[in-house]
Image (cartoon, rainbow, N blue to C red; front, side):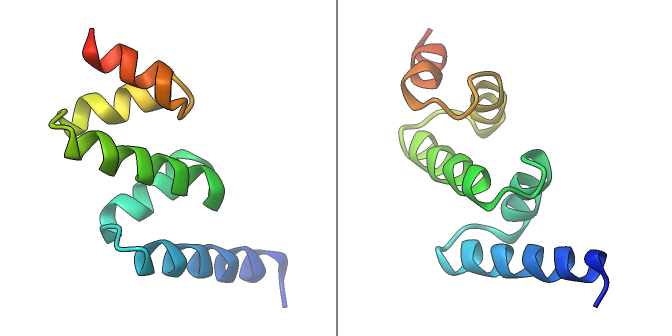
Length: 82
């Protein structure tokens, strides 16, 4: 199989695993795209997004701060609180 096909199958597998963790399909696709299809980084992002969302922060702000802070929880939390 072609390299592109293998990449696509890998992407589908990663999305499937993230969806099974209960994340929204649109958010999974967006996170995978934002982190150049790195499942690990996308998973970190989605976990922190959900965590900060539960704390009452606005999703748009959370996304922006997480991207700026490179998914660093403490740094992102400081930015959100300020």
